[in-house]
Length: 94
Image (cartoon, rainbow, N blue to C red; front, side, top):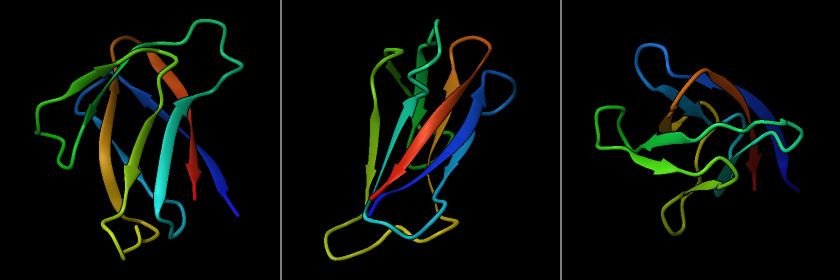
């Protein structure tokens, strides 16, 4: 069964951590579909200082555990910053 959570990311200061709310094999991150004007964002992984890659506003990002392993609750799997302003994202843990 999937566990869902929300997180808000912005473009102020350093990229914000994507933190696992529960133990799972995969975390899919996407912007809240009810937002009228979604914002492009940049993903950095595994560390905040790693080169980022741009994602389109409607594009999701998946973080997966290594084969045979689990992402543990509280683990930081990557970092996100928006290209402008702030946005609420859905985290889907499976």
